[in-house]
Length: 581
Image (cartoon, rainbow, N blue to C red):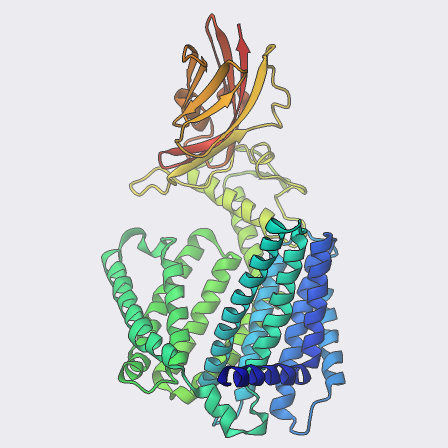
């Protein structure tokens, strides 16, 4: 009976959410239809329509909560629908007409959706003393966790059923499974989540009590597991900082993600434990925001130092922006009552919107920074004459690294505009050497603290070698190797080729008589040497990637098309031409 009552209550909540969020549901159905069309047959502008549908959904969701908070007499769903539609259309026209520059727009969309999601949590708590921000944060957190659990279980069940039918009864188009997951993810999951979102507009004490209730499992998890783990993580982080405080510590790639992740963890845990009455929870609220303040200062200094060396990228832009937010958050958590924790929401929303606003957004600022670095480095080395780049391979390694990183960033993260000192339709792999006079250089290897990676990558320059002479070979074999396992390839019914430890080729017959042995070690070393001591991902000429061995019984030519070295392990692709005599 209890199970039946719980099911009926959940069903009632779902039905209520349909009447509470009708415009949101319409947008969700539109997103599901867009996905369904893409699954059935890929179409152009899918990403553009998807991003528009998602932003329209969030605009409608934020609009609904704004109506509930500030308008006491019902909701005009027509105004909400029109408003969200207009905003979504405006966003639609900020994106390109095709799928070019796809790396920029997903990030901008994610940032916009994130800021709208924070507004969705914050708006119901504005000027409501009985509903502080941390209470609604807990309510949304519980709703997300419950939705994830239900959706994963349902999706696993549906996939298992369809797989069983496909395996045991009759074939099922794989797209049917994708369509089912689309419905579960974009309709069931979101509608179920919305059914769990509290409605504070009626000032119902039961709703507030249910929102602020901390399940026993979550309380134990936070107090006795999460808080001790954060404490230990704090000790480890402090030890790492103390041991490595000098030298290259401040520009270590590992430092920023460690400090940023710590600040995120402390912020989320703080908002959750504010709902728990326990001595460990109170200690966490008193101590850890102050520790976070010190950590954020470390992170900000490290980011500024890296900017001096490498300029601003969109990633570092967001790291600095997060540093500003974390500093303000740590101050609020440390010196204000927990009821004031909601102040962090509008600050986070404003900073997020700044990062996607015209002229000051992450990509515009980082583009100008990298263009300035490129121009300065080229000018200092006399590589610009009459506004054109003059190749020069005799400049220092440091300047080669600076030019490579700036050019790679500008050609990867652009919005379609022309880039000064970088030709249109520039390909960093095939055109870099021609334009700048040297191949891409990513790392500095000289000095007491070399920054050379543990790996290297080299590939055949097909542009320079479109035709490869094979001199009348009988067989041509393509081999991909990824590990040191022994692999055998049948050449004829009586002859096999065995690759041993990714470095030795043995051609033999079925009786074990060896025709020809080819050790690839020297060829691999020659190929990596061709790429240059400090280069990664550099093309090499055929002369460095091709070698022939021959005896009275057989002839074998090995042509390396790509090699990837990590520490002592080598993987890659080779073509093997075999002639039996």
